[in-house]
Each structure stands twice: as C-alpha cells, then as structure tokens.
Length: 116
Image 1 (cartoon, one colour):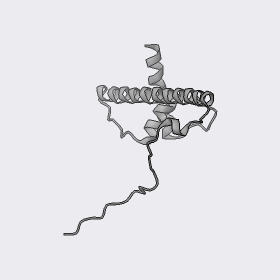
Image 2 (image 1 turned 90 degrees about the horizontal axis):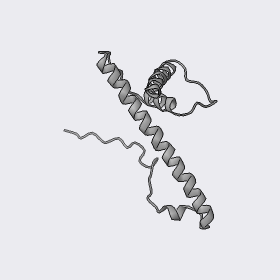
Image 3 (image 1 turned 60 degrees about the vertical axis):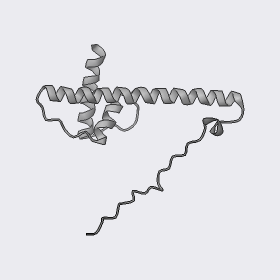
Image 4 (image 1 turned 90 degrees about the vertical axis):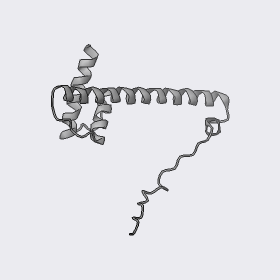
C-alpha cells in the first residue's frame, strides 16, 4: 500500500517571524510612540470589526435555525459581507449578485441589533 504524498501548500509563501515590536519601530522615541499609538488603534478597530462580524454571523445562523430554514454554507463571501456590513461604507465598488443579497441581509440584521 502506497502512502499518499502530502500536498505542500506553498509553505514558503507565508512565513511568520516573531520579533519584538521595538526592533521594528523607529529608534527615535517620539516617532516610535506615535507609530505605536497608530498601530494599537488599528489593532483595536480590527478586533472590534472581527468580534461584531462573528456575533452577526452567529445571530444569522441562529435566526435561520429557529425559523426552520436551511442554513447555507458559510463561505468566505458570507464572512466578508458580514464584515462589510459592520464597517463604515466606502466609495469602492459595490457587491453584486449573491454578495449583494448577503450584504442586504447582514445590514437588516445589523439594523435590528442597533434598534434593540
């Protein structure tokens, strides 16, 4: 019996190096403090978007479950539209097709949450 060769999903493509943040930031303390503040703000905003999107997806699945509606597969498009509904709207291209439907559903659930 032959063993199947594991597929190498381009392990060289993504690498993560753990280094102290102080080795990345500028050596000047004023600039480093300003950059650290900007970085912390971006991390905080990304965390809020991720958390709210996760809760929105949970609510969407629970709503489908309690109404005895078939729960569709959660894809990357579903996740990105949930995140898009949580973020401020931008002037970029608008979603089309199924993504537009998902975005409208996410926005309607988001509207319900804000009113509640």
